[in-house]
Image 1: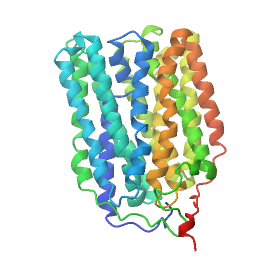
Image 2: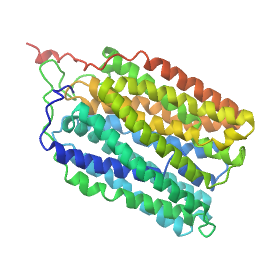
Image 3: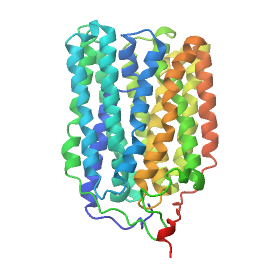
Image 4: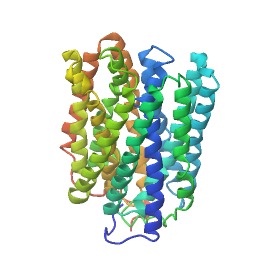
Amino acid sequence: MSRNPDTLPPHYRRNFVAFLVDYVCFGIALKFFDPTSVLPAFVSHLTDSAPVVGLVGTIFRGGWVLPQLAVARLINDRPRKKPCILAGMVSRLVFWVLALVAWSGLARNPTAMLIVFFTCMALFMIGDGTSSVAWFDVVGRAIPVKQRGRLFGLGQVISGIAGVGVGALIRLILGNPRLRFPTDYALIFALTGLAFLPAFPAILALREPAPDDPGPRTSAPGRGNWLKPLVTHTAFRRLILCRILVAMIDLSTPFYVGHARDVLHLPASVIGDFVIAQTVAQIVASLTLGLVGERWGPRLATRIGAAVAVTGPLFALAAHLAGGGWLARGYPFVYVALGVVNSTWMLGFYNYLLEIAPRGMGSAYVGLSNTFVAISTLAPVAGGWLLETTSYPTLFAVAAAIVGVGFLITLGLSAPQPAMVPAPAEDRP
């Protein structure tokens, strides 16, 4: 998807604002329903099963990536992909459903509440995964690479600053004795739905650019073997492996809240501190990695994020072995690491992916990459099983070791250069 970085596409400013509003709204909403702290805490009120708590992360990741290859193949040849973005955004309405059923008292039946919760989460993530394939494709055409890093960085900074307030609000809600479970979480789900609302008119105002000309040496999208890039494109194959290994941090992520509560004996209101820590880290990381991306490219951003990812489970392991003390008080650091990692997915891994994808194959590369990374969606459930059969120290050590290998592989990523996929025989001179 290579183009002159100094040439701005038509409607650039309008589209930049549209994507920025959507990105910020999603980021703020994500702070309310944070899948690394808020959602696992909600599920832990309904069940003591670690694998069920881990199912939050599996559905969150799996629902997002599993439909993407099919969607990519369906829309890649279509000139307009904005309708797919809008269709997927409808799934955001499920948070109003969750707010209503939680407020109505369904949580008095934990099994029924869990069924409704996981169904809503699956629908939301499938819808967002469907939308994101088109979203990344349009971003790749509407926003040049240098401005793209600025878009992601600015969006993460704005949503991050707002997220500090969200974290403080969550702390107040969960620490208020008048707001008992599940009323407290019903309020959080309603605020999530409210945060999403401005994104709808923003995307409606988007002016989608004309599709890229794939060029004479690029295979026509949607034709031939879509798995071929895994064999012919070394950088793409290595990037997928890096993403899978770094994403295995989710072995331990859903269980930090339980570890803090049950082992380190921190209060429930500390969840707000976790959200704030993760948010502040994301702000700093967005500014830093945005500048890194503009100056040295997304490859270095992936390396920084992967290196920081290792420190999260290592700190949790150290706090456990120390038995509390000052390390327990510093436990929000594990969410600092998560905040940096969350910034890295967009500013590092996805920006690198958009740079190495051939022209006209953005949807295909995003969908294919995310489909193979779907294997990492099993990490939270596997982490729950590992926790129940071993211990917290084993869980944290295994997570750190796997992510560490992912970091080592990022050191082998080559400078971004779009792959030139040979054209089908009937298209050759």
